[in-house]
Length: 127
Image 1 (cartoon, rainbow, N blue to C red):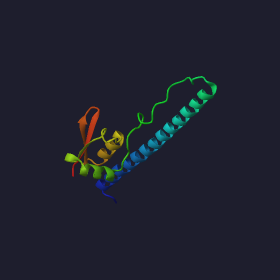
Image 2: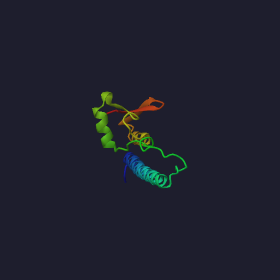
Image 3: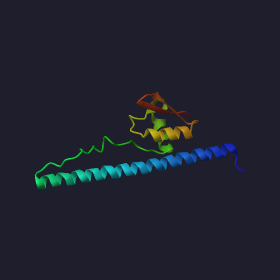
Image 4: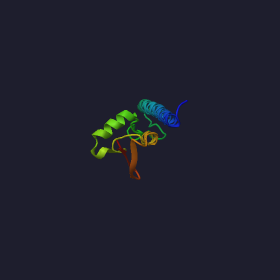
C-alpha cells in the first residue's frame, strides 16, 4: 500500500502534468486563432483591393499583443532559475505563463516560491 506522502506527491505530480497539458492545449488554440486571424486579414485586404472598398468590421489584434507567454516544464524552469541572479526570475520579463508557474510552484512548494508584487510576479528556486 502506498504511503500517504507518496500518494500526495503523485497527486501533485499529476496535477502539474494536467495543468501543463491544459496550457499546451490553450497555447495551441491561441496560435491557431492568431494564424486564422492573420489569414482573415489577408483575405479582407485582397477583397478591399479587388472591390476598392475598405472592409468593415473590427480590426484584428497583432499576434504579439495576444501572446499568453511561454509554457515551460519544471526541469527547464529549474535550469533557468539556477542561472538567474539570486535564483529568482521576473515571470513577465521572461515571457513565462503565470498560470503554469503558479501550478508548478503549488505542486513543488519545497522547490519553488512565488513572490513579487502585483503585475510583476517572481519565482525563486529554493534548493
